[in-house]
Image (tube, rainbow, N blue to C red; front, side):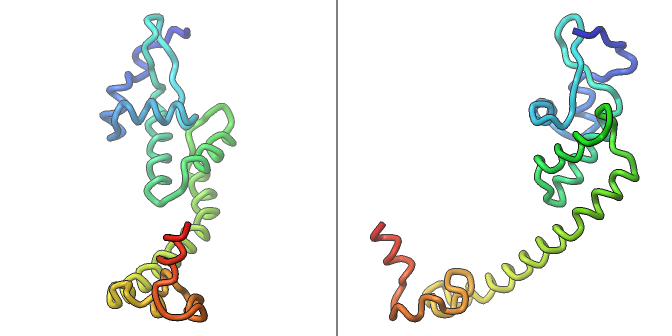
Length: 153
């Protein structure tokens, strides 16, 4: 147990209120190694004030779809668990940009295919770009091949 100065640290409730997350989310982030706390003599958690910037970093990365494991890996590379700086964010956002662009491209493709799929009502697997891209099942004869194959399993 480390005795902490109450002026330099925040309680879980204070951090949660300022970061806009539930206290349970703080505990989750801590278990995942994204943030850390110290304990008072009474075994109560206390967070350094810079945890707020670290939480903002985590939440922004989450919003754009970066998996928490990748966020944790990047944060673990920072010396002494320091808070990510503007330069850190620029480096990471540049590295993640290609991945985000690819994800956007796949989502747009899914959206476009999904729209045409709704038109067929999934009654025609020949035309369904989601279930049967390129009519790969057309050579197996008429009918709902995927449903027949799944029912045999």
